[in-house]
Figure 1 (cartoon, one colour):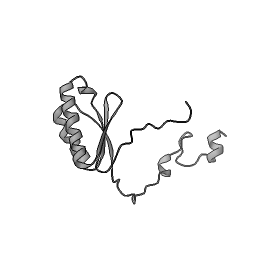
Figure 2 (cartoon, one colour):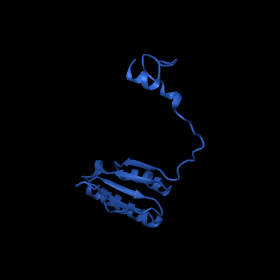
Figure 3 (tube, one colour):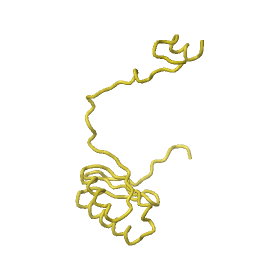
Length: 122
C-alpha cells in the first residue's frame, strides 16, 4: 500500500492508476457576486491605443500599463503620460510609475500609496 493509498484509503472507483479525480472535489458556488473593480495589464504600442485604456479606467477598473514598446519614443510617451494625467485628474483617480516601463492608473476615488512595503528580513 502506497502513501497516497494510506491517506485516501484503498483505490476507489474513478481512481485510475493511483490518480485522484479532483474535479469531483471542486465546489461550484454560483452565488458569488461579480467584482466591483477589475485589474488588468495593458501594453500600449501607439498613441491611438490610449482610448481603449482610458475607457477601461473610466469604467472603474485599475490598469497596469506596460509602455516598454514605446519607451524609446519620448514624444509619444510624454503625450500619453500627459493625457493620462489629465484623465485621472478629471475622474479623481491616480497615476504612478512602477519601475522603468510600467504605470499604474487607478479609477475614481482610488489613490496609490507610493510607499513600498518591505518584509522584516533585510
